[in-house]
Image 1 (cartoon, helix red, strand yellow):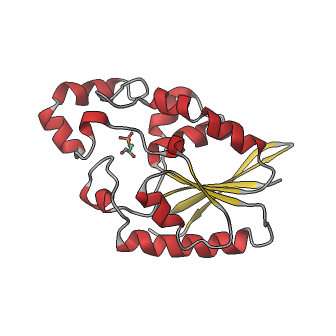
Image 2 (cartoon, helix red, strand yellow):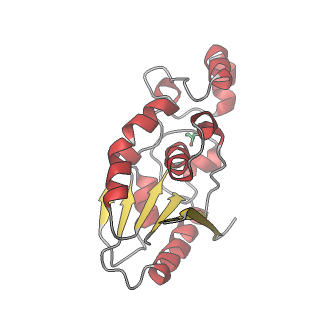
Length: 195
Ligand code: G3H
């Protein structure tokens, strides 16, 4: 059985500032993770010439993939982070202060809440459909480097977690979730490469 490796991008400059969305580069810590990840992937998939690396179209995932060499890389717009619309670039504090009604409605129903001019988790789940179809079709290992909200949705699909849990699944930085689909169901391993 071939593994699917899921990981968030290395810490970004916006992660450090607590800003959501955006398209910043990764921090120094994020760069350190990208090197550790490359090392891990090199060892884990060394013999598999058909393996591929999938990223979003955002800098932080592309930069996280940069040190990984020897595998084809594919960028998917469908792997981009949830679009926070008018809240893109804000901190949660700023949203709470300047748009309290938006903040409250999201808190009440994070799964269905759609950012004005942006997306909801349900929207993200829907746009991931072609990615999931392609992932299931692959015979070779795939490394998916994406974002928190998107990976919650992807993970929930493979781990068979209920829809309502999706926005609340823990998806830490600098950790690889390895999923194997075998005859006995889905097996999962986690590798925390750094804090
Ligand atoms: O920028 C978006 C975050 O990665 C998603 O986090 O849905 O918990 O606000 P959240």
